[in-house]
Image (cartoon, rainbow, N blue to C red; front, top):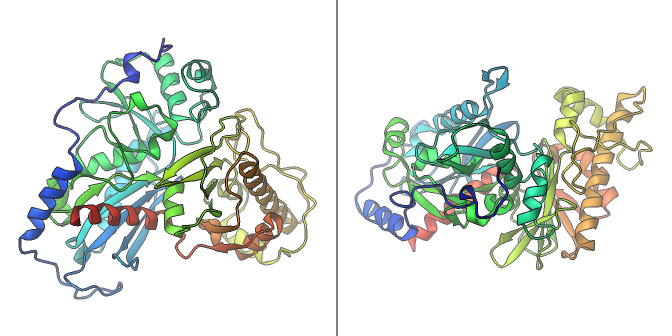
Length: 462
């Protein structure tokens, strides 16, 4: 049974040699390749924004909860191409085969990138859902078990995790990466000698660069330092795109693959909220908030944690409420039509706690919390109004909690994700929060991932 911090799985399981290339060596290789004459594909027939043949582009891929997207930008931030894919449904023994689905989606997105632009892509980065955990074979990279998804909770592991982690540390939550690892270790009867941990984004990036054992410090937050062999800053060059992928898809020989981040961090980066007090609420399948703060706040009792962002902190958490609940009740067409009929300046008397299933992570970590979506009024407009306003109240409670715990007070909220398109919901949230709320200029996490790819390419250009 895993019960000691000195257990071998809490130390690096990855081979020590031949895997993790240094940034200096990678950048040296890239400079040599770029010193040669580069031949670019023709732009003829391009229906996207026009680019100069000498201009480099940067590719970001976002693997969210319900699908994946890509964004291709130049160094000025202009988008030259973008696209999305739903996850194909693959089954294995009556359960969804997420590994197969994610892998297939990755290569479908690469195919979706306009062919004539692939030769001028300088770098690639990927974001994935926070705390989506994969147990892999450290020599082959193949999964040893099904992935633990971002919203899964493993309360059985909490006593052990709490015995080895600092009080109220981020890992002291049933949905943390470490809890998932400990739960797997104690319940799965299989060979664990070569077992090691990667996050969703780490594994997808490995498919592109082939260097096992690299993560970024945003994804690593909910794990434990001894477990991970190499933790890098987001946007750090890891390696060159694998030759077989370059050949098959027509990417440049010097295309860099960089460390990624979590989907909510990528959404924050996309919004370009750069001053303390600015915040980003991501309204996708879940509700995630990130507040730029001068001080760090961590408290596992409430699901609050802080991500490092240069010399500041991104304080926040992720609730299980959000768009997934709405999709269980309404179609997209119904959501659009019913929203138009809502008066956002009117307070809804309905008091719900919308969750897709049992369990909440933030602003209260409670794996036993049950959804509350009743009573349901006869009017669907009133029902939707009540749900949207109840989600806004959860958001307001979250920002109030961060202030009480010592974070910089929120002054303005930018919105990312699919929920940012609902103008009536924005007005409801603005009223409930008592703050300016607006849609971020760039709302997709894929754009934030592309900014990380740009950052990595700039490091090699220095």
